[in-house]
Image (cartoon, rainbow, N blue to C red; front, top):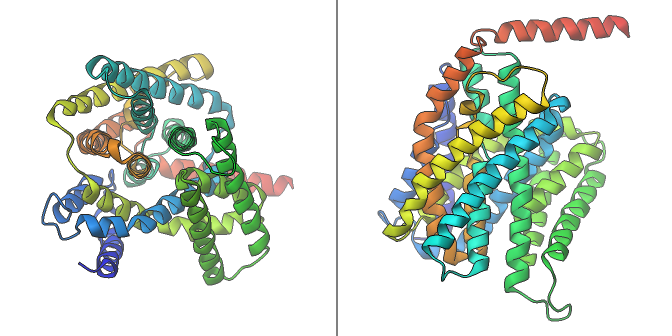
Length: 414
C-alpha cells in the first residue's frame, strides 16, 4: 500500500482514537488502553492482515524518528514544571536506580546463562534497554486515574514525581546505550573510531545547540500557530541530526526540550502547546510498535515473566528503600504498586533500539510489548488500592483549596 495513505490512516486513527478515549474515560479515568493500540498495530501489520507491510514500515522510519523526537522534547520541556518537591529527588533517583540495576542485571545474568554464545555487546544492549524500560511508569496514566478518582495528597503527587524521574532517567540512560551501539558498530572515516563517551557528548551537544537555537528563534513570540510550527520544525531538524549521527532522537530531543525549559521565557506557554501532541504521538507509536512486532523464538519468551517479576520486585523494593531511608515521611502501604502502570516511553525505547540494532528487535519488542499488556491489566487495580490505602481518594478538591489559599496568602504577603 502507498506509504502516504498508510501515514494518513495512522495519524487520523491516532487523533480519532484519542478523542474517543477522552470521551469514554473522561469521567472514570483509568490507565490508558495502550494494549488495544498494540493489538490493532499487530492486526494490521505484517504478522496480521499485512495492511501495513514491511516495505511501508521501512518507509515510515523517518516518521518514527520524528515521533520519538516529539516525545523526548515533550518530556524534557515538562521536566521543570513537573519536577515537584525537590526534597524527594534523592529518593526518586535511588528508587529508579534499584529498578534499572535489578532488572538489567537479572536479564543480563539470565541471557548469559542461557545464551553464552551471544555477542557481549548484544547482551549488554538488550539487558540495559530492558532495565531502563522497567523504570518507566505512566505519568499520564497516574494523573488520569487520580483525576478520575478525585485523588490528591502527598502519595498521589509522589507517584507522579517518581514516574516522571523514571521517564527522564530511562531516556538519559538510553542515550548512553545508543552511543555505545554507535561506537561499537560505526567508525567515521575522517575521525576514526569514537568512544561511547565521545558519541554521548556529541549527542548531548547536538541537543543543547538545537535547544539554544530554538530558544533564540522563538524569542518572545506569542502566536500559538507560529510557535507550534516552529516547535515541530525544530524537532524535525533535531531528529534528523540524531538520525544522521545514528544516535537516539529521544535522547537528543530530551536535552533540547530541557534546555528550552530552563532558558526560554516562553517555556510555560510552550508546555501548553506541545503537550497537546503527547497523546496522539503515544497512540501512533503504540500502533507502529504493534505493526513492527515480529515474535521472538519460543525459547526467548521466558524473558517475559522474568521481566515482569523483576520489575515488580524492583519497583516495590526500590521505592520502599528510598522512602524509608531518604524521606522523613513513613512509606505508604504498597507505594511501589502504584507505579506498575507501564509507560509508553518504554515502548518508544524499544522501538528506538529496534532501529539501532535490528537483530534485537524481535527479542526486545516481544518482551516489552507482551509485558506491557500483562502489566496494564493489573496496573489500574493496584493504583486504586494504593490511593485508597493512603485515604487520598476524593481529596483532590481539598488539595486545590489548599493551593488556592496558599497562593492568596503569598499574594497578600507580596
